[in-house]
Image 1 (tube, rainbow, N blue to C red):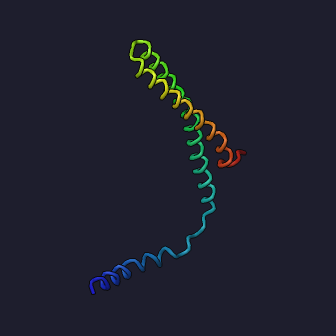
Image 2: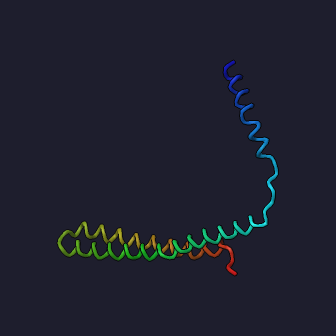
Image 3: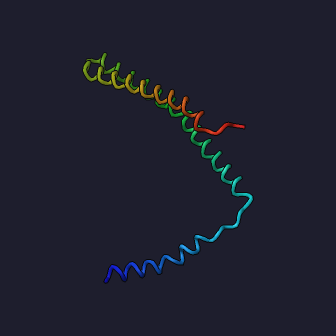
Length: 113
């Protein structure tokens, strides 16, 4: 009985909200332009972000290679090897990510005018 009463109360509470949302909104001539502008800003941000991320990854790889070399030379050969291997794997990941981004990016981005 309590479940039935709770269902009835919630149905009565949300029915007016459903009826209000079904009303047709007046069309604005600026909506499409605003959406296009928002899309341009968003894609510009993503493009800017994707332009400098591979460079940052490459810089980190160089630092890790130098650090691994220093570890290897100063006597901790095993730790240096592990760091160098991790840096090379990181370089491969950064390069593969860059290739994927550059090959898929033009397919999903709208043509520029």
